[in-house]
Image (cartoon, rainbow, N blue to C red; front, side, top):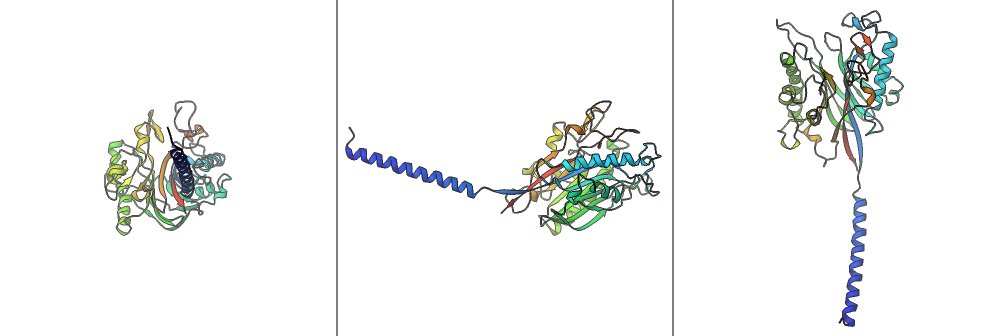
Amino acid sequence: MWTYFQLHMLKTFRFQAYIIGLLLFVSLQVHAQDTKRTYKISCIGFYNLENLYDTTDDPEKSDEEFLPNGTKRYTEEVYKDKLHNLSTVVSQLGLDDSPDGVSILGVAEIENRKVLEDLAAQPELKSRNYKIVHYDSPDRRGVDVALFYNPKYFRELESAPLNVPLRNSDGTPYATRDVLWVYGLHNGEPMHIFVNHWPSRRGGEEASAPSRALAASVARNKIDSIFKVMPNAKVIVMGDLNDDPINKSVTEVLNAGFDKKTLSPNALYNPWNDYYSQGIGTLAYNDAWNLFDQIIISQPFLSEQQDGFFYKKAVIFNRPYLFQKSGRYKGYPFRTYDFDIYMRGYSDHLPVYIVLMKEVK
């Protein structure tokens, strides 16, 4: 039998326990509200625009087939149609993660600054006020790399083209695309960006591999010089590498690895191998997928416990309209031309982007 005193003490204990539990619950709720965080999001992308030429003959470039009287009948109407298609893609790139889309976009296979200005002036992109970093490269086909950036996010401080000194078998120079280096402030944070379009696999993957290794070494040498001055520099290497994440030009020369936990000092992090190992790529050839279009980052992006931007995820932009629906290229990226037949497509490459986040305090 419980005594009156025991019953009284039991009720008192239960009441105290209830009060303590209630206070603990309220405390946890307040603490949860106090620790709720908000983030600024920035998307950084790359897109091979597949032969974005204008319709004017440039005697210093091999642009003959991309002229109104050329083999492709590349008229002003075709040019405007291609600009519209590409601007549609760029305007949607990154929108799933940021209302501003991509804040920085590297591009390849563009003829000159004019086509960049025409693209940025399209109705789909005009409101973003994209600025341009571009240098004419010595490439024999007359195509360059370049960088668009939204001044709301990025401010250019310095830039330069880095020459890739290729040679023919007889020792004479072989002109190819420069590597574009851009240094600036991304939301006030210093960042180095490299835009690449490494030599193609023409002549065979193995035979042409040394050319891509040389291009990779040009970027890597500049990165090493940056790390000597700024050991914790934030570096972004992007482009059409014409090699997959597992190729030596990427893993050994550029020194880009896949495992965040085992990266050696000054190694870069390549987030694209998970896609590649699953057979997912950015362009198709002979019914097989390659993942040539990559965005690779330095290790200071990897920690989420920091005041600056950190890496969140990598995305291949693969909307259904970007794929060929019929013909011999069914299921491939929807290209502009099938040889000399105008297909009204976009590009033979899919665009990619990474998502960066920064806590707003």
